[in-house]
Image 1 (spheres, rainbow, N blue to C red):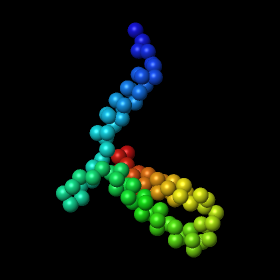
Image 2: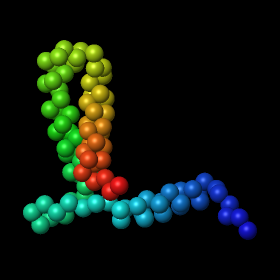
Image 3: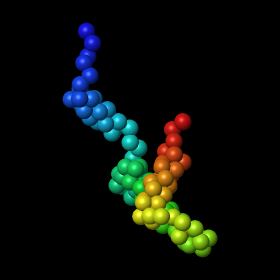
Image 4: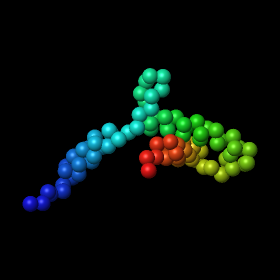
Length: 91
């Protein structure tokens, strides 16, 4: 007997997968407090994106980065993903 895949089954399957993957998140201990790794990576990504802005201004690239909020948000996400791959890669 096959399990029918309906819209409600897909939602339940996605929720179950998210619930099981939540236990795979690495945790960082800072001064006795536990923080999830994604929070560390998000903060580092935002700091690195802010640090790259003066470089874009000096090299006259910032006028070509349009629209700036979207560009810098994507840059922060990219930097956060790179930090995650550098520090939390388990391969």
